[in-house]
Image (cartoon, rainbow, N blue to C red; front, side):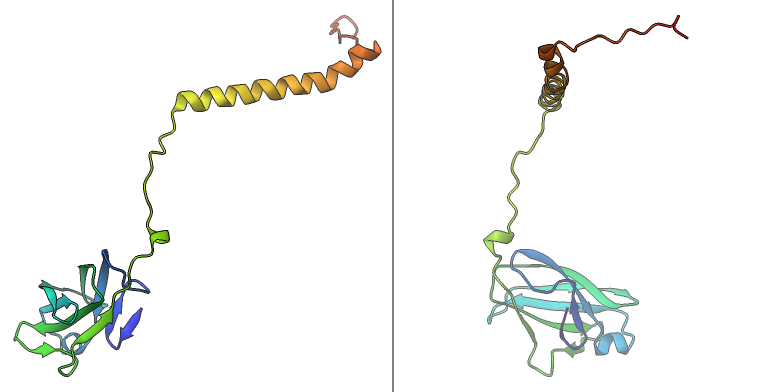
Length: 156
């Protein structure tokens, strides 16, 4: 997702209490800076201010950060020469969305015991065999046309 030129996220939406990977291909990447740091905070007051060194790759400088519960993510970048890329003094500001309860996965104890699975399987097999025998042989027994097949090897 590209929200601003030269800043990319690995997700379509920024959602609170999640981890996001940020890729930066701005002026410091284009100028071949050796080190770039992402300077970020949350909300209008830049709460929980933090700075992380970004890893250089062929795709730009990259870093992973944890999004806190806030209405916005504010960030800017600086290189090892203490030069800043702060969107011409405006900083880069991105909205953070609240996590929808329907999207939150609650783990339940879904442990399946092999013993119970085996018993269920065996009972279903027994029931199927019994139904097959009733359908096949009961009409023959009632009508009197039931004869056992005798396997004679001397008939050849």
